[in-house]
Image (tube, rainbow, N blue to C red):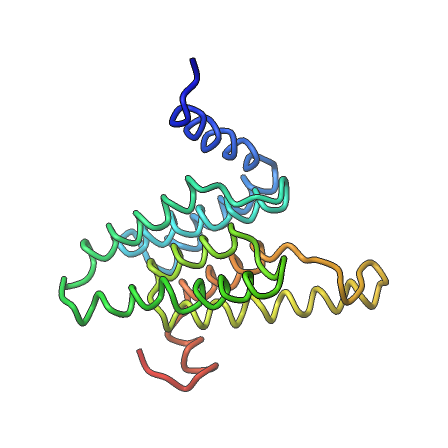
Length: 199
């Protein structure tokens, strides 16, 4: 007899089958190289490489099947917690930016999704909560800005080529993953360029 718990477990595992593809393996290899090249063979570099691979997995799943696997989102959130305890002094002042990061984009997205049907998918919202926890709010804002800018450019390109209209839906996760990935590697520089802030 199949229980609700076993069905949920099977669903989590089934969602992972949407990830493997030649595109995923190529970009995952690039992600590992980028994370280790920028961060070095240090704890920060290893965490960065893992985070980037998980972002690539989310993007691949969204492109291949239109989903964001919950298990990958959980991995990102857990990775964020582990990274925090390993690389940062544990205190309220260092934890708050990560807690704000978990809600600063995901909650507005949730509110918009409730007000405007189809504005954002549940996977988009959960990814932003987990990634925000990992990155902290400043880097998360920079990543979303880059991702939305890239999505806007791609949407304009599609409209110019008459492959999409104003009401066409665009899968957002690949662009969010791109922006978050860039921000995770070059957060300080991006934040200064976009907002004039210092970390």
